[in-house]
Image 1 (tube, rainbow, N blue to C red):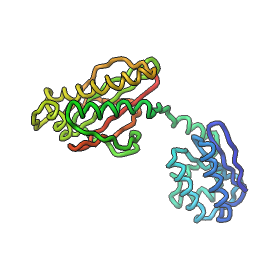
Image 2: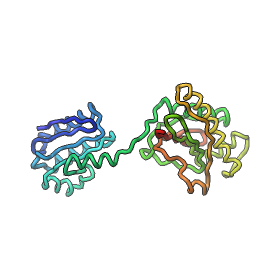
Image 3: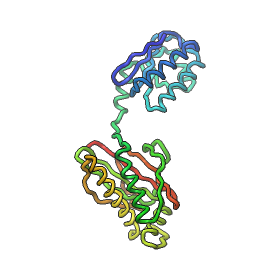
Image 4: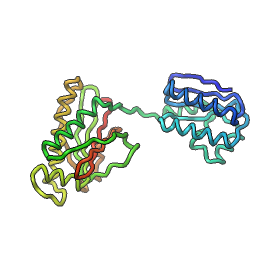
Length: 275
């Protein structure tokens, strides 16, 4: 009743019977197995040979599809007959099932939607995290713990009142790194650096963010260049207040790492793109 067809970029699961409870377990197992074995960018559920489907089974199948969406696998249902399409729309499942008339239509939409995302691995990120922890300990007598990284748009939004950013340039890629501080955290760290008590961010004390990033970058660059990354020297830029509204300080798809201190939390953002 269920056939799995493996392609280069996607897997198609063909349902060759009515979609009712007895077939659901086999279909669900086929979908999960295909996702685990082949790790496709997309999975298509072909319903061309399915003439009937009960609402309870569609609801159960929607939960299986949501599991795949959680693993960043695009899912489309193909060639569903009008009666099944009506049930999908009437039960508000069209956003989950993404019904399309043909494999070609789904592939065209998938190709248009997919954008290349540079991979930022642990080998690249760790020197910046280690540099941050060491720099703040030495320069500002501040202990720092790294939190769990997450991709931009897949975790909490970053709040910052001052951002120091710096371009990362290499022979094979470019990108950027940014230190993003809420006001209270920055003032505490900057004050510890010079033994002062600051009440507000000013052009004078804002330079501390750039100094920190410059030291962090220098330490990370030395480690990474020993591994063959050939990163070039760069100069930090600091923005705060109204200036933050006038420019987008980091352009690439990014990984975000929360950094926790006794004064509060700040964030590191690292973005890479092929050069």
